[in-house]
Amino acid sequence: EVKLVESGGGLVLPGASLKLSCIVSGFTFSDYWMRWVRQAPGKGLEFIGEIKPDGSKTNYAPSMKGRFTISRDNAKNTLYLQMNSVRSEDTATYYCVRGCTSLFDYWGQGVMVTVSS
Amino acid sequence: DVQMTQSPSNLAASPGESVSINCKASKSISKFLAWYQQKPGKANNLLIYSGSTLQSGTPSRFSGSGSGTDFTLTIRNLEPEDFGLYYCQQHNEYPWTFGGGTKLELK
Image (cartoon, rainbow over the protein chains, first blue to last red):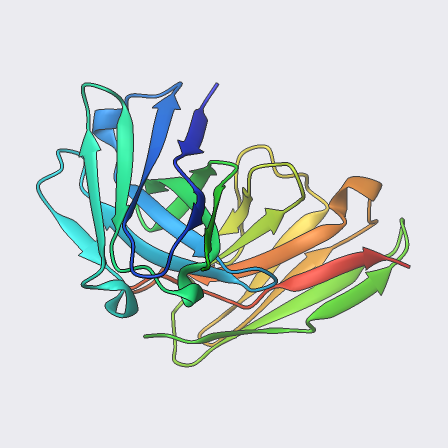
């Protein structure tokens, strides 16, 4: 069974940094592109970025470049999202997603990040 | 970026009925449109890709149609488990973009 479990969310102050993790199981992690998607409360889904199976390349949505960094540790079956200088508009549920070509075929249940003073 | 616009934003129906959800792209995306279902407490689920291809496990009451800029998700003979949020996503060009969602509610 494919499982993706995010962690590391919570309440964070504006301007702070936060690192989300996603531990996966049920498939060969090192074979797949992995992605992060977020969803602000009551809003739609927003693609953040993706990372190549071997971790050698990352792509980010233009609006996400600069403050977000995606990385992975294939030995630990873990995907990461480093968030820097967070703002109130970063308040959202963050989803870890397996990439299958240009599709998003398996999703985690998401982790909530709230940016507030 | 390709902008995806869904309509309606909200839709109310009863079990047994058929409904359609529309998705419009800001430019042609050929056939490369996917549909996802979102339900509280469950992981998002890929239903359909390439406009009309059902993902493994998607019930046959779901169907997709369209090409170019206009697409439709149709659900026939609604089941209670079909109520939730639906999102379209273009998978023709990077960056991948999603529609704003359609909430299918029980009438």
